[in-house]
Image 1 (cartoon, rainbow, N blue to C red):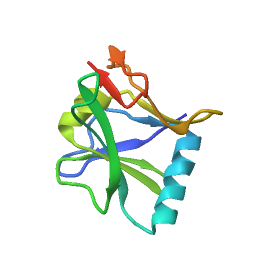
Image 2: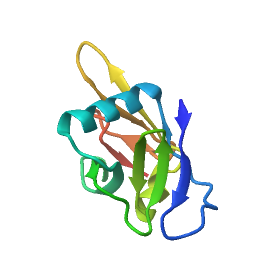
Image 3: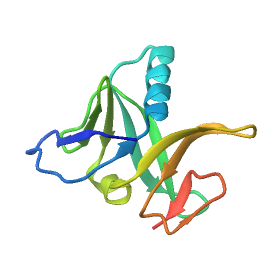
Length: 123
């Protein structure tokens, strides 16, 4: 498991916030960027909705916003807005392959309850 170095775009890098990403997840993110022919970073966020109250979101983003936390994993960058960081601090993003499902898995210490699909949670 890798821990990215964090900085906040518009502020000093004194943040103790962390996001962990496994090597397998980093490889899958890298492959997605190459496949889609996009540059920038992966935006991780949380928004209201889903069967448990909050849903994870991730999408390509060409650049961070001024208040984002930016995590560097070599050539892979992850952007997290301050509100989402409250729910994602300490989270591990992993990639799992199984016979039934392959995809990203969120291991979130703030999730008190998660839905069966793993993309929704309550804090």
